[in-house]
Image 1 (cartoon, rainbow, N blue to C red):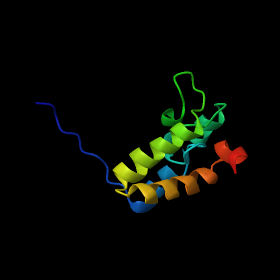
Image 2 (tube, one colour; image 1 turned 30 degrees about the horizontal axis):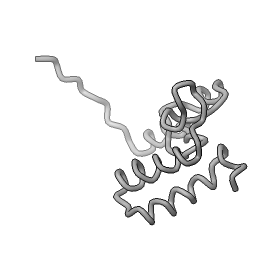
Image 3 (tube, rainbow, N blue to C red; image 1 turned 90 degrees about the vertical axis):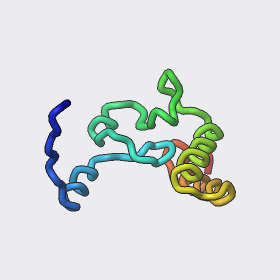
Length: 101
């Protein structure tokens, strides 16, 4: 049986400090597990869910549908109309879709 490791307990302020450098996707706004320095070194700061296998941004419709179904409906338990309104509002604020406004 593997030995159990004892993890250090974090305070709320330590957790906030760690998350300070976590940035959101430039397309959907959801947090990415990369720091600002890592994102700044990349051309596009988009998450894997918003990019295709070549690293290109997916269409607005694909990103919108994923945000509605997987984030708002599945994770936040919203109904479809509310999820669509929330997704439209969020995407309207994202740099990747500034030309769509």
